[in-house]
Amino acid sequence: MFSCDWSEWPLVTLRFSEAFRVEDETLYLDSIQRLADAREPYAVILVTQGDEHLSQKAKVRNNMIFKHNRDHFTRYCRQFYRVKTDVDWAEIDDTKLKKAMPFPAAHAPSEEVARRLALAVLAAAR
Image (tube, rainbow, N blue to C red; front, top):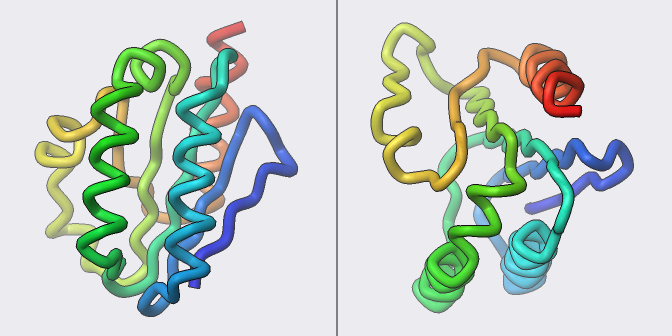
């Protein structure tokens, strides 16, 4: 399942749980494109439970969105927090996440912590 909460814009919360269905992939990719099209600062919280299972076709489209919009993500995404609910936080290493993303990225221990941190980042950007 996938859901996207835009109700607190410029804070967006993406939620993954279980394996994706085709409808979930479409909603996810449309959400990523909407973020790529944004022309004002925002922050993203990604909450995951288990592994994300994008199809190969969706992975290719996801990579193309990031590749073609890298400058926009860099300019407008002020912070990305990943909240993984099923991990040992002592084993989390942000190095790969930070290297892969064209914007500031980090793990957060809970959605509440990520929200508080993201709102502070957005307030400081004003």
